[in-house]
Length: 150
Image (cartoon, rainbow, N blue to C red):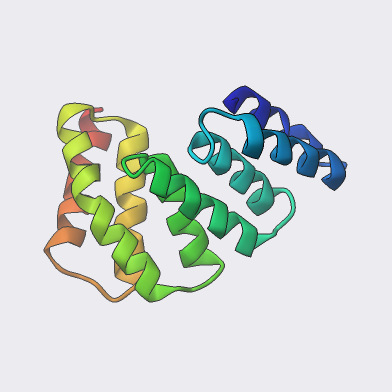
C-alpha cells in the first residue's frame, strides 16, 4: 500500500494531476492495510509539497501520527508544517517536547545523521517557541555529538 501511495508523488508534480491523486487516495483509504499510517503520511506529503494544501496535509499528518505515534519522520513533517506554515507556537512546542525524549532515546540506541537532523529541528522548534531550557540543550548536545562521531 505504501508503494501505491508513493506512486502518487509523480502525479502531484509537475503536472499537478489532481484527479489521479484523488483517485489513488480513495483506493488507499478503502483498501490499504497501513491506512491511516504510512499511506496517510505519504498522501499528506503530496498535499503539502505538490499542492500546497496545508490544512489537508496537517490533517493527514495528524491522522498518520495517531496511527503510528512512535514514527519520528511523521512527527518531523508535522512539526515543520506547524512551525513554517501555521506559525503554531503552542502546537510546535507541544510536539517537540513530546518527541524530544523519543529522539534522545533513539540517539542512544541508533545514532544516525537523520536522527541528529531531527534533534536539531526539534531544538529549533523549541527555541522558536521560546523554550530555551534543559530539553532544548539536551537535543543540541546530542545532535552535535552524533554529527562529530556518526
